[in-house]
Image 1 (cartoon, rainbow, N blue to C red):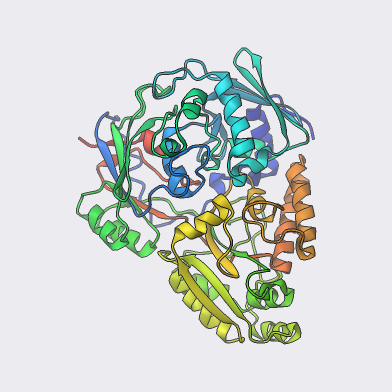
Image 2 (cartoon, rainbow, N blue to C red):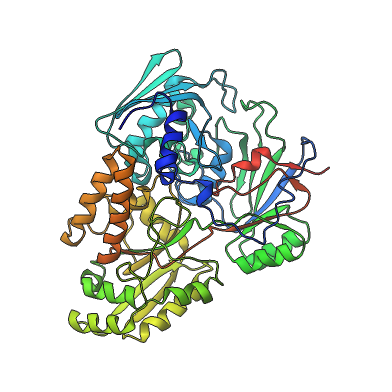
Length: 537
Protein backbone atom coordinates (compact mmCIF):
# COMPACT_ATOMS: atom_id res chain seq x y z
CA UNK A 1 0.00 0.00 0.00
CA UNK A 2 1.37 3.38 -0.90
CA UNK A 3 2.01 5.73 1.98
CA UNK A 4 0.57 9.23 1.81
CA UNK A 5 2.42 12.20 3.22
CA UNK A 6 -0.31 13.59 5.48
CA UNK A 7 -3.20 12.13 7.38
CA UNK A 8 -5.62 14.41 5.53
CA UNK A 9 -4.55 12.89 2.22
CA UNK A 10 -4.48 9.45 3.78
CA UNK A 11 -7.98 9.88 5.15
CA UNK A 12 -9.35 10.90 1.78
CA UNK A 13 -7.76 7.84 0.19
CA UNK A 14 -9.12 5.52 2.84
CA UNK A 15 -12.60 6.93 2.50
CA UNK A 16 -12.66 5.97 -1.14
CA UNK A 17 -11.90 2.33 -0.40
CA UNK A 18 -13.14 1.92 3.10
CA UNK A 19 -15.58 4.22 4.81
CA UNK A 20 -15.51 1.88 7.79
CA UNK A 21 -11.93 2.71 8.66
CA UNK A 22 -13.16 6.17 9.45
CA UNK A 23 -15.16 4.50 12.20
CA UNK A 24 -17.96 7.00 12.63
CA UNK A 25 -18.63 8.13 9.10
CA UNK A 26 -21.84 10.12 8.96
CA UNK A 27 -22.87 8.45 5.70
CA UNK A 28 -23.37 5.22 7.61
CA UNK A 29 -25.90 6.77 9.94
CA UNK A 30 -29.57 5.94 9.95
CA UNK A 31 -31.54 9.18 10.30
CA UNK A 32 -34.83 9.63 12.03
CA UNK A 33 -37.17 10.97 9.34
CA UNK A 34 -39.33 12.64 11.98
CA UNK A 35 -36.51 14.50 13.73
CA UNK A 36 -36.48 18.25 13.79
CA UNK A 37 -33.19 20.07 13.36
CA UNK A 38 -34.52 23.61 13.46
CA UNK A 39 -33.00 24.44 16.82
CA UNK A 40 -29.57 23.10 15.91
CA UNK A 41 -29.60 25.09 12.64
CA UNK A 42 -30.62 28.40 14.19
CA UNK A 43 -29.00 31.25 12.22
CA UNK A 44 -28.96 33.74 15.10
CA UNK A 45 -25.54 35.02 16.03
CA UNK A 46 -24.21 33.05 19.01
CA UNK A 47 -24.30 34.83 22.35
CA UNK A 48 -22.19 34.08 25.38
CA UNK A 49 -23.44 33.31 28.85
CA UNK A 50 -25.80 31.05 30.71
CA UNK A 51 -25.59 27.59 32.21
CA UNK A 52 -27.21 24.74 30.29
CA UNK A 53 -29.07 22.26 32.50
CA UNK A 54 -28.82 18.78 31.00
CA UNK A 55 -30.94 16.03 32.54
CA UNK A 56 -29.32 12.62 32.81
CA UNK A 57 -30.14 9.39 34.62
CA UNK A 58 -26.47 8.47 35.04
CA UNK A 59 -23.40 9.92 36.66
CA UNK A 60 -19.71 8.99 36.30
CA UNK A 61 -19.08 5.32 36.95
CA UNK A 62 -16.01 3.26 37.84
CA UNK A 63 -12.94 5.47 37.75
CA UNK A 64 -15.04 8.59 38.25
CA UNK A 65 -13.56 11.45 36.21
CA UNK A 66 -9.99 10.20 36.17
CA UNK A 67 -9.08 10.72 32.49
CA UNK A 68 -6.53 7.90 32.47
CA UNK A 69 -8.70 5.27 34.14
CA UNK A 70 -12.39 5.94 33.47
CA UNK A 71 -13.72 4.14 30.42
CA UNK A 72 -17.48 3.81 30.96
CA UNK A 73 -19.69 6.06 28.86
CA UNK A 74 -21.20 7.89 31.85
CA UNK A 75 -17.68 9.14 32.57
CA UNK A 76 -16.29 9.69 29.07
CA UNK A 77 -19.31 11.72 27.89
CA UNK A 78 -18.33 14.29 30.55
CA UNK A 79 -14.57 13.88 30.20
CA UNK A 80 -15.00 14.84 26.54
CA UNK A 81 -15.96 18.32 27.66
CA UNK A 82 -12.87 18.65 29.88
CA UNK A 83 -9.98 17.01 28.02
CA UNK A 84 -8.69 17.00 24.44
CA UNK A 85 -7.12 14.40 22.18
CA UNK A 86 -4.42 15.01 19.56
CA UNK A 87 -6.85 14.81 16.65
CA UNK A 88 -10.60 14.28 16.40
CA UNK A 89 -13.20 13.17 13.89
CA UNK A 90 -15.96 15.42 12.66
CA UNK A 91 -19.49 14.25 12.11
CA UNK A 92 -18.47 13.18 8.59
CA UNK A 93 -15.78 10.88 9.95
CA UNK A 94 -12.91 13.00 8.64
CA UNK A 95 -9.92 13.67 10.88
CA UNK A 96 -9.62 17.24 12.15
CA UNK A 97 -6.97 19.11 14.17
CA UNK A 98 -7.25 19.34 17.93
CA UNK A 99 -4.15 19.52 20.11
CA UNK A 100 -2.19 18.52 17.01
CA UNK A 101 -2.40 20.86 14.02
CA UNK A 102 -0.68 18.48 11.59
CA UNK A 103 -0.10 14.74 11.44
CA UNK A 104 1.33 12.27 8.96
CA UNK A 105 2.00 8.58 8.67
CA UNK A 106 5.67 8.35 7.78
CA UNK A 107 5.59 4.61 7.08
CA UNK A 108 3.62 1.55 8.19
CA UNK A 109 4.90 1.83 11.76
CA UNK A 110 5.67 5.54 12.28
CA UNK A 111 3.41 8.56 12.90
CA UNK A 112 4.35 12.21 13.44
CA UNK A 113 2.14 14.80 15.16
CA UNK A 114 2.84 18.55 15.31
CA UNK A 115 1.57 19.94 18.60
CA UNK A 116 -0.47 23.16 18.68
CA UNK A 117 1.45 26.03 20.24
CA UNK A 118 0.20 28.21 23.07
CA UNK A 119 -2.21 25.67 24.60
CA UNK A 120 -2.75 25.87 28.35
CA UNK A 121 -4.41 23.62 30.86
CA UNK A 122 -7.33 24.95 32.89
CA UNK A 123 -5.00 25.94 35.73
CA UNK A 124 -2.96 28.12 33.36
CA UNK A 125 0.05 25.82 33.00
CA UNK A 126 1.48 25.21 29.52
CA UNK A 127 0.88 22.06 27.50
CA UNK A 128 4.28 20.60 26.56
CA UNK A 129 5.44 17.72 24.34
CA UNK A 130 6.49 15.87 27.48
CA UNK A 131 2.85 15.90 28.67
CA UNK A 132 1.84 14.15 25.44
CA UNK A 133 4.63 11.60 25.69
CA UNK A 134 3.85 10.89 29.34
CA UNK A 135 0.10 10.57 28.65
CA UNK A 136 0.56 7.87 26.02
CA UNK A 137 3.14 5.97 28.04
CA UNK A 138 0.80 6.03 31.03
CA UNK A 139 -2.10 4.67 28.97
CA UNK A 140 0.07 1.87 27.65
CA UNK A 141 1.42 0.87 31.05
CA UNK A 142 -1.34 1.60 33.54
CA UNK A 143 -4.71 2.31 31.92
CA UNK A 144 -7.45 -0.33 31.54
CA UNK A 145 -6.75 -2.91 28.86
CA UNK A 146 -9.66 -1.69 26.76
CA UNK A 147 -7.71 1.56 26.28
CA UNK A 148 -4.18 0.19 26.24
CA UNK A 149 -4.71 -2.60 23.70
CA UNK A 150 -4.06 -0.43 20.64
CA UNK A 151 -0.70 0.63 22.13
CA UNK A 152 0.61 -2.85 22.89
CA UNK A 153 3.14 -2.63 20.02
CA UNK A 154 4.13 0.98 20.69
CA UNK A 155 7.90 1.00 21.19
CA UNK A 156 8.73 4.70 21.51
CA UNK A 157 7.15 8.13 21.79
CA UNK A 158 9.78 10.81 21.30
CA UNK A 159 10.08 14.59 21.02
CA UNK A 160 11.71 15.31 17.64
CA UNK A 161 11.88 19.04 18.34
CA UNK A 162 9.86 21.81 16.73
CA UNK A 163 6.81 20.57 18.63
CA UNK A 164 6.83 17.33 16.58
CA UNK A 165 6.16 14.08 18.44
CA UNK A 166 6.98 10.72 16.86
CA UNK A 167 5.15 7.46 17.60
CA UNK A 168 6.99 4.31 16.63
CA UNK A 169 5.41 0.83 16.58
CA UNK A 170 7.07 -2.56 16.26
CA UNK A 171 4.54 -3.63 13.62
CA UNK A 172 1.74 -2.03 11.59
CA UNK A 173 -1.12 -0.78 13.77
CA UNK A 174 -3.82 0.38 11.35
CA UNK A 175 -6.25 1.20 14.16
CA UNK A 176 -3.95 3.81 15.73
CA UNK A 177 -5.14 6.97 13.98
CA UNK A 178 -8.77 5.93 14.21
CA UNK A 179 -8.47 5.30 17.93
CA UNK A 180 -6.49 8.43 18.75
CA UNK A 181 -9.01 10.51 16.78
CA UNK A 182 -12.03 9.06 18.53
CA UNK A 183 -13.36 11.13 21.42
CA UNK A 184 -14.75 8.18 23.38
CA UNK A 185 -11.58 6.09 23.24
CA UNK A 186 -10.19 8.33 25.95
CA UNK A 187 -6.68 9.08 24.65
CA UNK A 188 -6.76 12.34 26.56
CA UNK A 189 -3.69 14.49 27.07
CA UNK A 190 -3.15 15.38 30.72
CA UNK A 191 -0.82 17.58 32.71
CA UNK A 192 1.83 15.19 34.03
CA UNK A 193 2.71 17.33 37.05
CA UNK A 194 -0.94 17.78 38.06
CA UNK A 195 -1.74 14.11 37.63
CA UNK A 196 1.23 12.82 39.57
CA UNK A 197 0.81 15.19 42.51
CA UNK A 198 -2.96 14.57 42.79
CA UNK A 199 -4.12 11.60 44.86
CA UNK A 200 -5.92 8.69 43.24
CA UNK A 201 -9.15 9.65 44.99
CA UNK A 202 -8.90 13.33 44.05
CA UNK A 203 -8.18 12.55 40.39
CA UNK A 204 -11.66 11.05 40.19
CA UNK A 205 -13.39 14.23 41.39
CA UNK A 206 -11.14 17.07 40.18
CA UNK A 207 -9.76 17.94 36.76
CA UNK A 208 -7.16 19.90 34.80
CA UNK A 209 -7.67 19.60 31.07
CA UNK A 210 -7.32 21.67 27.91
CA UNK A 211 -10.94 21.22 26.80
CA UNK A 212 -13.71 23.84 26.61
CA UNK A 213 -14.98 23.21 30.14
CA UNK A 214 -13.52 22.50 33.56
CA UNK A 215 -14.99 20.55 36.45
CA UNK A 216 -16.47 22.79 39.11
CA UNK A 217 -17.97 20.10 41.33
CA UNK A 218 -19.29 16.57 41.26
CA UNK A 219 -22.03 16.24 43.85
CA UNK A 220 -22.61 12.49 43.84
CA UNK A 221 -26.22 11.52 43.39
CA UNK A 222 -27.14 15.09 42.46
CA UNK A 223 -25.20 16.69 39.61
CA UNK A 224 -21.91 17.31 37.83
CA UNK A 225 -21.19 21.01 37.34
CA UNK A 226 -18.85 22.22 34.61
CA UNK A 227 -17.68 25.78 34.10
CA UNK A 228 -16.14 27.53 31.10
CA UNK A 229 -12.39 26.95 30.75
CA UNK A 230 -11.09 30.51 30.38
CA UNK A 231 -7.80 29.16 28.96
CA UNK A 232 -9.45 27.16 26.16
CA UNK A 233 -7.41 27.39 22.97
CA UNK A 234 -10.31 27.69 20.46
CA UNK A 235 -10.95 31.42 20.30
CA UNK A 236 -14.43 32.57 21.34
CA UNK A 237 -15.59 29.17 22.60
CA UNK A 238 -17.34 27.83 24.49
CA UNK A 239 -20.30 30.21 24.52
CA UNK A 240 -21.84 28.72 27.64
CA UNK A 241 -20.74 29.75 31.11
CA UNK A 242 -21.16 26.13 32.10
CA UNK A 243 -23.15 22.91 31.99
CA UNK A 244 -25.02 21.37 34.90
CA UNK A 245 -25.57 17.63 34.36
CA UNK A 246 -28.51 17.03 36.67
CA UNK A 247 -29.04 13.43 37.75
CA UNK A 248 -32.64 12.20 37.70
CA UNK A 249 -32.66 8.42 37.99
CA UNK A 250 -36.34 7.97 37.06
CA UNK A 251 -36.86 8.65 33.36
CA UNK A 252 -40.49 9.64 33.81
CA UNK A 253 -39.41 12.28 36.31
CA UNK A 254 -36.72 13.34 33.84
CA UNK A 255 -39.36 13.77 31.15
CA UNK A 256 -41.41 15.96 33.49
CA UNK A 257 -38.32 18.04 34.28
CA UNK A 258 -37.59 18.84 30.64
CA UNK A 259 -41.25 19.37 29.72
CA UNK A 260 -41.67 21.86 32.56
CA UNK A 261 -38.61 23.80 31.44
CA UNK A 262 -36.56 22.93 34.53
CA UNK A 263 -33.97 21.33 32.25
CA UNK A 264 -32.90 22.68 28.85
CA UNK A 265 -32.04 19.27 27.42
CA UNK A 266 -31.98 15.61 28.40
CA UNK A 267 -31.31 12.12 27.15
CA UNK A 268 -33.36 8.96 27.52
CA UNK A 269 -32.85 5.23 27.14
CA UNK A 270 -36.56 4.84 26.42
CA UNK A 271 -37.45 6.13 22.95
CA UNK A 272 -41.13 6.51 23.77
CA UNK A 273 -40.31 9.15 26.38
CA UNK A 274 -38.19 11.08 23.91
CA UNK A 275 -41.10 10.93 21.46
CA UNK A 276 -43.38 12.38 24.12
CA UNK A 277 -40.95 15.25 24.64
CA UNK A 278 -40.85 15.81 20.89
CA UNK A 279 -44.65 15.90 20.69
CA UNK A 280 -44.54 18.68 23.27
CA UNK A 281 -42.35 20.85 21.09
CA UNK A 282 -38.82 19.79 21.95
CA UNK A 283 -36.26 18.89 19.28
CA UNK A 284 -35.37 15.20 18.99
CA UNK A 285 -31.80 14.72 17.82
CA UNK A 286 -30.86 12.71 14.77
CA UNK A 287 -31.04 8.97 15.44
CA UNK A 288 -28.28 6.65 14.28
CA UNK A 289 -28.02 2.89 14.83
CA UNK A 290 -24.67 2.97 16.57
CA UNK A 291 -25.26 0.76 19.60
CA UNK A 292 -25.23 -3.03 19.73
CA UNK A 293 -26.73 -5.16 22.47
CA UNK A 294 -23.71 -7.32 23.15
CA UNK A 295 -24.24 -10.56 25.05
CA UNK A 296 -20.83 -11.74 26.22
CA UNK A 297 -20.54 -15.49 26.70
CA UNK A 298 -18.69 -17.25 29.50
CA UNK A 299 -18.29 -20.86 28.31
CA UNK A 300 -17.09 -21.92 31.75
CA UNK A 301 -19.76 -20.28 33.91
CA UNK A 302 -21.42 -22.59 36.44
CA UNK A 303 -21.59 -26.01 34.73
CA UNK A 304 -20.19 -24.77 31.42
CA UNK A 305 -23.45 -25.12 29.50
CA UNK A 306 -22.31 -22.72 26.79
CA UNK A 307 -19.01 -24.49 26.26
CA UNK A 308 -21.06 -26.77 23.98
CA UNK A 309 -21.14 -25.18 20.52
CA UNK A 310 -24.40 -26.88 19.61
CA UNK A 311 -26.13 -25.34 22.63
CA UNK A 312 -24.80 -21.91 21.62
CA UNK A 313 -25.94 -22.39 18.03
CA UNK A 314 -29.37 -23.54 19.19
CA UNK A 315 -29.59 -20.47 21.43
CA UNK A 316 -28.89 -18.19 18.48
CA UNK A 317 -31.31 -19.96 16.14
CA UNK A 318 -34.08 -19.80 18.77
CA UNK A 319 -33.98 -15.99 18.93
CA UNK A 320 -36.52 -14.35 16.62
CA UNK A 321 -34.62 -11.17 15.86
CA UNK A 322 -37.31 -9.78 13.57
CA UNK A 323 -39.92 -10.03 16.34
CA UNK A 324 -37.54 -8.46 18.85
CA UNK A 325 -36.88 -5.53 16.51
CA UNK A 326 -40.57 -5.08 15.67
CA UNK A 327 -41.94 -5.42 19.19
CA UNK A 328 -39.09 -4.90 21.61
CA UNK A 329 -37.56 -1.87 19.88
CA UNK A 330 -40.75 -0.53 18.24
CA UNK A 331 -39.07 -0.88 14.87
CA UNK A 332 -36.06 1.28 15.75
CA UNK A 333 -33.64 -1.63 15.86
CA UNK A 334 -31.75 -3.51 13.19
CA UNK A 335 -29.97 -6.83 12.82
CA UNK A 336 -26.31 -6.48 13.61
CA UNK A 337 -22.92 -8.09 13.83
CA UNK A 338 -20.44 -7.02 16.48
CA UNK A 339 -20.04 -3.91 14.33
CA UNK A 340 -23.31 -1.93 14.31
CA UNK A 341 -25.02 -0.94 11.02
CA UNK A 342 -23.73 2.64 11.33
CA UNK A 343 -20.25 1.38 10.39
CA UNK A 344 -20.27 1.92 6.64
CA UNK A 345 -18.44 -0.44 4.31
CA UNK A 346 -19.07 -3.70 6.17
CA UNK A 347 -21.58 -6.44 5.47
CA UNK A 348 -24.73 -6.57 7.58
CA UNK A 349 -26.46 -9.82 8.65
CA UNK A 350 -28.88 -11.55 6.31
CA UNK A 351 -30.89 -14.77 6.51
CA UNK A 352 -27.82 -16.47 5.05
CA UNK A 353 -25.68 -15.45 8.02
CA UNK A 354 -24.94 -18.54 10.14
CA UNK A 355 -27.37 -19.09 13.03
CA UNK A 356 -29.11 -15.75 12.52
CA UNK A 357 -32.37 -16.72 10.81
CA UNK A 358 -35.12 -17.74 13.24
CA UNK A 359 -35.19 -21.55 13.10
CA UNK A 360 -36.85 -23.18 16.14
CA UNK A 361 -36.87 -26.64 14.56
CA UNK A 362 -33.16 -26.37 13.82
CA UNK A 363 -32.60 -25.23 17.41
CA UNK A 364 -34.42 -28.26 18.80
CA UNK A 365 -32.40 -30.58 16.58
CA UNK A 366 -29.12 -29.07 17.77
CA UNK A 367 -30.18 -29.35 21.41
CA UNK A 368 -31.02 -33.02 20.93
CA UNK A 369 -27.61 -33.60 19.35
CA UNK A 370 -25.88 -31.69 22.15
CA UNK A 371 -26.98 -34.14 24.83
CA UNK A 372 -28.54 -31.25 26.77
CA UNK A 373 -32.05 -30.85 25.32
CA UNK A 374 -33.37 -28.62 28.11
CA UNK A 375 -30.54 -26.34 29.26
CA UNK A 376 -30.90 -23.46 31.68
CA UNK A 377 -28.97 -20.38 30.61
CA UNK A 378 -28.60 -17.28 32.79
CA UNK A 379 -28.52 -13.70 31.49
CA UNK A 380 -27.34 -10.76 33.61
CA UNK A 381 -28.15 -7.17 32.68
CA UNK A 382 -28.32 -3.77 34.32
CA UNK A 383 -31.45 -3.59 36.43
CA UNK A 384 -32.44 -0.18 35.05
CA UNK A 385 -32.02 -1.02 31.37
CA UNK A 386 -34.86 -0.14 29.02
CA UNK A 387 -34.24 -3.47 27.30
CA UNK A 388 -35.75 -5.57 30.07
CA UNK A 389 -38.97 -6.21 28.05
CA UNK A 390 -36.83 -7.45 25.16
CA UNK A 391 -35.31 -10.12 27.39
CA UNK A 392 -38.73 -11.17 28.62
CA UNK A 393 -39.67 -11.64 24.97
CA UNK A 394 -36.45 -13.56 24.34
CA UNK A 395 -37.19 -15.75 27.37
CA UNK A 396 -40.54 -16.68 25.87
CA UNK A 397 -38.98 -17.44 22.48
CA UNK A 398 -36.33 -19.70 23.98
CA UNK A 399 -38.86 -21.59 26.09
CA UNK A 400 -40.49 -22.81 22.88
CA UNK A 401 -37.41 -24.88 22.02
CA UNK A 402 -36.74 -26.13 25.56
CA UNK A 403 -34.27 -23.51 26.77
CA UNK A 404 -34.93 -21.90 30.14
CA UNK A 405 -33.60 -18.35 30.23
CA UNK A 406 -32.93 -17.23 33.78
CA UNK A 407 -32.99 -13.42 33.92
CA UNK A 408 -30.70 -11.78 36.49
CA UNK A 409 -31.09 -8.00 36.75
CA UNK A 410 -28.12 -6.60 38.70
CA UNK A 411 -26.83 -3.11 39.53
CA UNK A 412 -25.05 -1.90 36.41
CA UNK A 413 -21.96 -1.12 38.52
CA UNK A 414 -21.42 -4.87 38.80
CA UNK A 415 -21.34 -5.19 35.02
CA UNK A 416 -19.01 -2.20 34.75
CA UNK A 417 -16.62 -4.02 37.04
CA UNK A 418 -16.20 -6.80 34.48
CA UNK A 419 -14.63 -4.63 31.81
CA UNK A 420 -12.96 -2.05 34.06
CA UNK A 421 -11.31 -4.28 36.66
CA UNK A 422 -11.81 -7.82 35.34
CA UNK A 423 -14.48 -8.97 37.81
CA UNK A 424 -15.96 -12.42 37.32
CA UNK A 425 -19.07 -12.94 35.23
CA UNK A 426 -22.27 -13.42 37.21
CA UNK A 427 -24.13 -15.37 34.49
CA UNK A 428 -23.64 -17.40 31.30
CA UNK A 429 -24.48 -14.27 29.31
CA UNK A 430 -23.77 -10.68 30.31
CA UNK A 431 -25.35 -7.74 28.52
CA UNK A 432 -23.33 -4.67 27.62
CA UNK A 433 -24.86 -1.91 25.54
CA UNK A 434 -21.89 -1.26 23.30
CA UNK A 435 -21.30 1.88 21.24
CA UNK A 436 -19.72 2.17 17.82
CA UNK A 437 -15.96 1.92 18.16
CA UNK A 438 -13.15 4.09 16.92
CA UNK A 439 -11.90 1.35 14.62
CA UNK A 440 -13.88 -1.64 13.32
CA UNK A 441 -11.46 -4.02 15.04
CA UNK A 442 -12.35 -2.50 18.41
CA UNK A 443 -15.65 -4.39 18.30
CA UNK A 444 -13.59 -7.55 18.86
CA UNK A 445 -10.38 -6.63 20.65
CA UNK A 446 -11.78 -5.98 24.12
CA UNK A 447 -13.44 -9.40 24.46
CA UNK A 448 -11.54 -11.64 22.02
CA UNK A 449 -7.99 -10.69 23.00
CA UNK A 450 -6.47 -13.31 25.28
CA UNK A 451 -5.84 -11.86 28.71
CA UNK A 452 -8.20 -8.91 28.38
CA UNK A 453 -10.59 -8.14 31.23
CA UNK A 454 -13.62 -9.35 29.29
CA UNK A 455 -12.14 -12.37 27.50
CA UNK A 456 -13.51 -15.66 28.81
CA UNK A 457 -12.41 -17.83 25.87
CA UNK A 458 -8.74 -17.82 26.83
CA UNK A 459 -7.01 -20.73 25.12
CA UNK A 460 -10.31 -22.50 24.35
CA UNK A 461 -9.79 -24.16 20.95
CA UNK A 462 -13.28 -23.16 19.83
CA UNK A 463 -12.16 -19.53 19.64
CA UNK A 464 -8.65 -20.16 18.32
CA UNK A 465 -9.48 -19.46 14.66
CA UNK A 466 -11.28 -16.23 15.51
CA UNK A 467 -8.41 -15.04 17.69
CA UNK A 468 -5.89 -15.84 14.99
CA UNK A 469 -7.90 -13.90 12.40
CA UNK A 470 -8.25 -10.94 14.76
CA UNK A 471 -4.46 -10.89 15.12
CA UNK A 472 -4.14 -10.54 11.35
CA UNK A 473 -6.73 -7.75 11.25
CA UNK A 474 -4.91 -5.80 13.93
CA UNK A 475 -1.73 -5.62 11.84
CA UNK A 476 -3.11 -5.50 8.29
CA UNK A 477 -2.26 -2.15 6.71
CA UNK A 478 -4.04 -2.97 3.44
CA UNK A 479 -7.55 -1.54 3.71
CA UNK A 480 -9.25 -3.66 1.06
CA UNK A 481 -8.12 -7.01 2.45
CA UNK A 482 -8.81 -5.76 5.98
CA UNK A 483 -12.47 -5.27 5.06
CA UNK A 484 -12.67 -8.86 3.83
CA UNK A 485 -11.05 -10.13 7.00
CA UNK A 486 -13.46 -8.23 9.25
CA UNK A 487 -16.45 -9.54 7.30
CA UNK A 488 -14.97 -13.04 7.60
CA UNK A 489 -14.50 -12.64 11.34
CA UNK A 490 -18.07 -11.44 11.86
CA UNK A 491 -19.35 -14.53 10.06
CA UNK A 492 -16.98 -16.81 11.93
CA UNK A 493 -18.21 -15.42 15.26
CA UNK A 494 -21.80 -15.98 14.12
CA UNK A 495 -21.00 -19.54 13.04
CA UNK A 496 -19.31 -20.46 16.32
CA UNK A 497 -21.56 -18.16 18.41
CA UNK A 498 -18.65 -16.77 20.40
CA UNK A 499 -20.85 -13.81 21.35
CA UNK A 500 -24.46 -12.84 20.68
CA UNK A 501 -25.54 -9.50 19.22
CA UNK A 502 -29.32 -9.78 18.78
CA UNK A 503 -29.92 -6.21 17.57
CA UNK A 504 -28.66 -2.64 17.38
CA UNK A 505 -30.41 0.67 18.09
CA UNK A 506 -29.49 4.31 18.63
CA UNK A 507 -27.38 4.59 21.78
CA UNK A 508 -29.78 7.04 23.38
CA UNK A 509 -32.36 9.67 22.54
CA UNK A 510 -31.51 13.32 23.14
CA UNK A 511 -34.00 16.19 23.24
CA UNK A 512 -33.60 19.91 23.81
CA UNK A 513 -35.77 23.01 24.10
CA UNK A 514 -36.15 25.94 21.74
CA UNK A 515 -33.84 28.07 23.88
CA UNK A 516 -30.91 25.79 22.99
CA UNK A 517 -29.07 26.73 19.78
CA UNK A 518 -26.06 25.34 17.97
CA UNK A 519 -26.37 21.89 19.51
CA UNK A 520 -26.74 18.66 17.57
CA UNK A 521 -26.14 14.99 18.22
CA UNK A 522 -22.98 13.43 16.84
CA UNK A 523 -22.47 9.88 15.52
CA UNK A 524 -20.31 8.83 18.47
CA UNK A 525 -22.62 10.49 21.00
CA UNK A 526 -19.65 12.23 22.62
CA UNK A 527 -21.71 15.45 22.91
CA UNK A 528 -18.78 17.54 21.74
CA UNK A 529 -21.14 20.10 20.19
CA UNK A 530 -21.68 21.54 23.66
CA UNK A 531 -18.76 23.84 22.88
CA UNK A 532 -20.80 25.21 19.93
CA UNK A 533 -24.00 25.62 21.96
CA UNK A 534 -25.57 28.84 23.19
CA UNK A 535 -28.77 29.76 25.00
CA UNK A 536 -31.41 32.31 24.11
CA UNK A 537 -31.32 35.29 26.41
